[in-house]
Image (cartoon, rainbow, N blue to C red):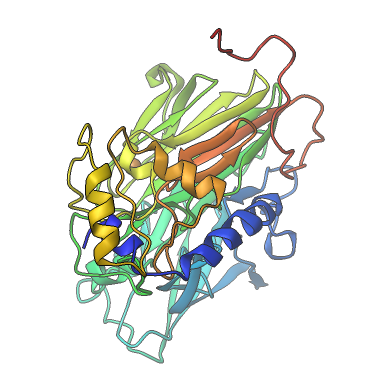
Length: 426
Ligand SMILES: [Cu+2]
């Protein structure tokens, strides 16, 4: 079944499309750091802003920071109207971000509420072998209903991840992953004004279904920043002149060239540690490899709304039917009439004759283009100048003069000074 066929098969999508447009604004206006759940790791350090996420609180017990992770099935909203049966931690996928400080002793209690065994591997952290979380190799699997204790000293600062090392293909395909960020002991070391982080995750969720297909190896159709798809992804906000860090981890099955407009950045770290200044060079795109982390830093020196996205253009689209025939330049108007006669009760419209942008036009104008249940339009997002024709791995870095330090609220669209916007001449 290709997209055109299933478009004709459901009327329920019209309502969910309207819902998406309405609530996406509310989603992106929400603060990106949940103050109640965010624990400042130490005075003077900049807290991590996990895009549409949160940090994991801890309890201090005799000098040990004790965290609790619950591995469990979760219902994860990728966008309003698009909810997926994932597996995650503490009610979300990805799980909450663990923040610690170089030199900390941490204890992580992992309770398994999944229907099968699991483990947690602390990706990139240097720790005793028996704490490495590889089921069968360094520890017995954690059976359903049991709790496992991991305890180690955090040796170096940097950006790491956690994920299962048990039935790995299925459990990661279901969304089990999280960030583990270690701050330097001295908060003035590697100081930035804003510190953003997110994980790249991809899924195969057939339109109209609720559960990702965990046996998919290559043909994924949902591309997300922290399990959100544009326009339901929070913007990154910075004041003009601030130093900004963005940490991007990749636990998908393909690489993602992450591209940022409006600045040049340097890769200052990986999941192996910090990159010495002599080894950094200016970039506007950095490829984040599978199972890898790239930390980029820059000064936000020009106000505006700057796109941040994966440069694989099919990764900035919503779920689409694959195997769609190439209709570019194919005259279809007579075919439309014939098919409409065959199915008088269905809405049929051929697409693709002059390009695919008309997909977005219909979504934006709210025309009656039905979608299957529980999916999102292939291209969405409404900007100040009209349709953005984007979805998936796309969001916006919003740089503004005169923002207060620590104000992460969405400032709305950029108001361009007069005479600074590209214009048509006829
Ligand atoms: Cu990508």
